[in-house]
Amino acid sequence: MLPEGTLILGGASSGKSSFAESLCVQSGLDRIYIATAQAFDDEMAAKIAAHRAARGPGWTTIEAPLDPMSALDGATPDQVVLLDCVTLWLSNCLLAGRDAELAGDDLLAALARCTARVVIVTNEVGHGIVPETKLGRLFRGAQGALNQRLADRADTVVAVLAGIPVTIKGTAP
Image (cartoon, rainbow, N blue to C red; front, side, top):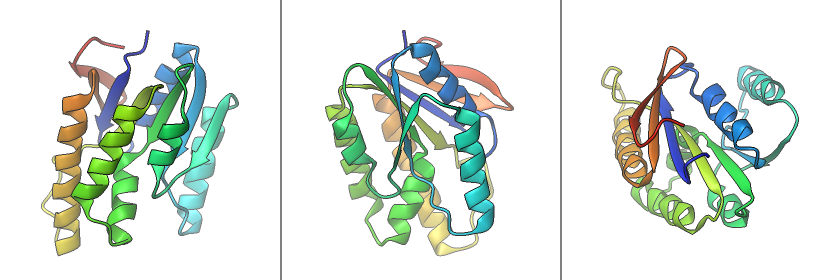
């Protein structure tokens, strides 16, 4: 059975979303997909469409670029929720002028209230170079801090590297 809270992290295009989706499908529960991406250009619109097509049927998708908390609050114990991804959500929050730590507090509170099993996808941002811009450095620090908070509270944490899941906390799902 899928742990109540599973955090999946890795680099961009590492296979983390595909792995997270497979965990949700294997759970046998009704599947909710909380999508945080926004299509600001044609390339991103195509990427979102490709992700949706790859998921296939059987998912209820909730678009929540700034407020995944409401979707988490609406989930029930007979569902599994995939929040994909916290990285895009946090960048959306920062670009909207929200305080990253307070936004993280809100997300963690909603996760604590959520009665469904939750799989969270996030990017590991600590392996790259130091960003050139102040906003980039602010984001990297905020994302790293939020990832640590999420990992601390998760039952299971899995890093996905080159498509290979490696359990770093808890029992392998």
